[in-house]
Length: 300
Image (cartoon, one colour):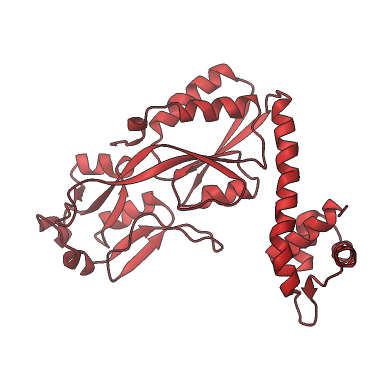
């Protein structure tokens, strides 16, 4: 049987790009990681890394075997997590990663119930950019994620759609687009668009579609609102973020000539089997999933 620590050393070295980075992640000396991978190569009968350069590079055999090693480790993590969940333990702490732009009112209503039900459980809230909640779950930093849906999730993720948020195109009241009754693609391309985008380098994601020839990016929808208010561009943002500014007359909602209905972005509750949810985490997940879909649209 292949030692789990050797498999983990192999997977981390492949994912992080060096034996030293894998050693730091595992809290071991680099020599221990090198030895573990060398022993794994002996057991497997193939070279997993080409060590002729400054940094180890996966061989063809290493690339072919990496998904199998990742699958074995994931299976072990899922087994341990499921066993912990079945034990019925109430967690001492839960971390919830919430993507900026998700309407908070329905979440806060659930959190108020949670506090009454589990007064001793500590909660931590992380506010993330597009796709960053998934990255925090993958790293084990968060237990649950509430985020705008993405096309695909990493292996081992579970997700359920709970509703939709309305994406609203806006500009400042003094912007030239504010004077256009029905905005065309040609109109949009004349002015800078500001797009919410993930800070991550490994899985860059953005909210909304690029429609302009010139764009800026920012992680925070709140910062984008400030940029738009300064007349530095237009943006598509969740109604929950811009509703109050539209109501106060500071932002103008644009109306597309090429679209007859609202642009909707799905909202997912996301978790990973690598970190099994205990009693409190499962309660929180179930109650988020049980909210009516229309609650998530927001409006200011």
